[in-house]
Image (cartoon, rainbow, N blue to C red; front, side, top):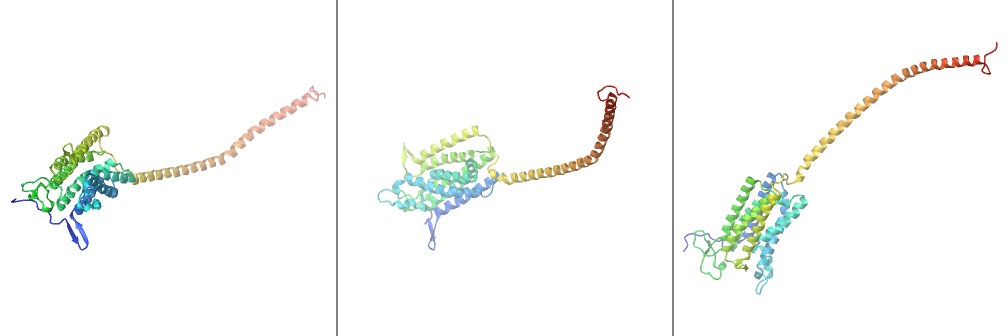
Length: 355
């Protein structure tokens, strides 16, 4: 008999009157709130506006839930669409079954839609939310504890998870304690979140590299934890399908890390351009006010100059006219007198006048 073990809840749901309160759902909801709360803190620290993370999460979370369920149903279709199974169970999310690969993929699509509506680059948003997603996964994994699912092989270790007979594998019905793979993954996700936080502070990760680091680190742990699980899963070349998915996603994340660091080094100077609009408007208003003052000053100066010119014109015109007239008149008079004298001396025919 084991001297120490982790007990499992007797029930995964508690009824508050007619309302069922399910442990699995509570873990998912709490995880979402933690991701949004911590993502908001990181977004503000990067220069973003409060509330932006929540606004985009309104798109990302529903898409993520649908994507996670679709991945699970597609990869484990025999649980819902084979003889003796009820296909309606495919919609019962509260009974467990969310694939993280589908949740991240579809959640990213929803986040892209929300970010596009706000005029925000998705990689910057992904960097801010990455550690929060890891924390959310750490919390969400405890939903498997409530449902007594996704555990590993039998173990006698003091932290072995006690599984009720109704939830044990068919080939080990008499063994009660198993590896708590949900706990292993939960602790691993916490470590991934701390790793991303440290690396982001140390290396100033940007352009989606913090998110890529989260993906790469998570897939490493998921691969070995997946290998420990004893629940049924499709296999390919001797490995579980999720192991292959983890390998492919890991390669993609590392490739993005390397290429992004070369092509777009450093971190974004601004993550939410709309945040700069009030400052820009104030600057424009100040410029307009300055231009208005300059125009007013210029207008007053022009008016003063016009008034001074008008005064000079009023004082100068009579003097100039008199001077010109006085000078012209004697000259004109002198010329006329000389002409008259010449004509008189010449006579009618132009010759000398006879006395």
